[in-house]
Image 1 (tube, helix red, strand yellow):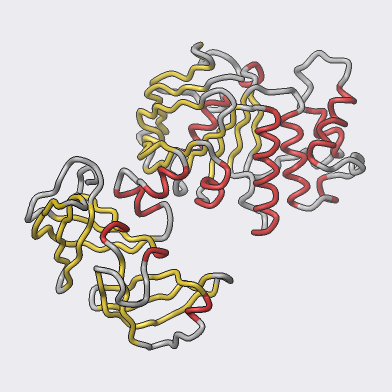
Image 2 (cartoon, rainbow, N blue to C red):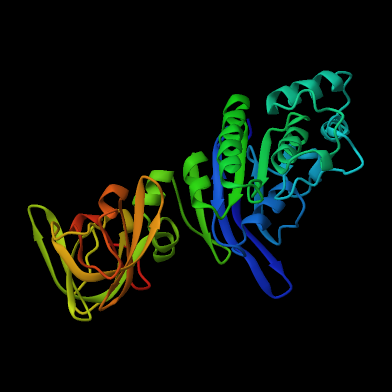
Length: 360
């Protein structure tokens, strides 16, 4: 399959920079996800790869060859949009076969049948889009994109209109199909669960730029920027000032004073903050315990609970703000609203960032 490489790609709409100097590589057969909030440039990048938007600066290469002058229909790209965009006057078979219009082939009927088997809709060939569920419509859109045997598959938030259970099911199917066909795939979403569950690599985006590229594990556990740390996963944010830095046999510990509370962070990497520097401390909600068993402790009051099944998310009010902790529901069942608790977390479970600088 094809390697896709973006080199310093920039896109402007009038005076607005939608994508700024983005460089990214999706190696052959890899599933790469562009993850970020609405308006960060994800879809614009996808449309430039597909040939539906012009690149203002930079280059896009397929296997080392620039494709900027190649029209969309000759790029070997299949695209699935946020909405299925099926032709309402065509039935399922006609919609799927429409993707073959640029291929000179005599086996279009067998190819359509193959695609319908792949997406599990054999027997529904004569139905129109308005006779299908939303999930079935997206399956047809996927089959239409795959029918011409593209070397690259582009998906623009294809699951956003589906309910949660169907979204999980179709996400798994898309990943299985991608692996079966060994397709180089670039997927756009703002949903972290989708990105973490399906991707080989994730590019976290903000304001037209890529903040970090890495495996799902790297993105979740080792964010490299303030934005990546705050966007991926549910976190608690504490702002403060470094009071001291000490190195011992466990590594480097940083003391942080935040209003009238004192925390210890165990830092990663080689750079060290200096006393007096302003820092931001992140702790994921699953790393907060509601007891005093860990080194960092914060008295708080339980002000709300979100039942998630196996776990419960507890909202906490402390003297320095509102925070959250995800605890086992069995433990949460004995907790009462307005109950006084102690939220605690280990120094090793912190992520420390210097403001406007790299993480430490």
